[in-house]
Length: 135
Image: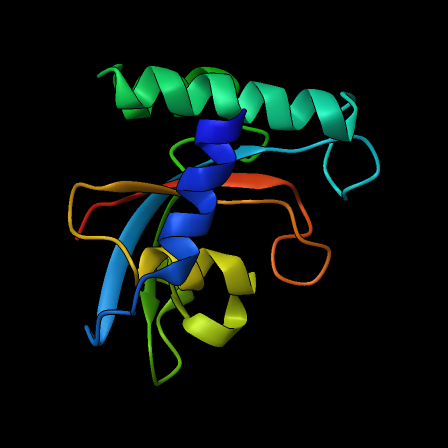
């Protein structure tokens, strides 16, 4: 768990990229009472997120894990833009239209890299988002 929490802190400490648009895929691990259908405890959610992150770091296929474990819908791919309204029909949203931690992590990742937004009642209220930057 220490490595997982250190990973979250390391990503949060990075500077953001200035790219006007990014695309990410995420794996949400939620818990009972967080506004999803999840029934696990908050503690169990963090443990599961940490275990899945370890599997991703070891090379397991991200999309396969999203398909099997996410508490959101598969494929969980979203585009985000820094300014403008996006295009919801194409799953592109303004950064401010998403959970804050989603963009906070997405704009700190390089293409192909994975980072995690830890649970935060204000910035990541649905649980732990393991995010892979696609574009």
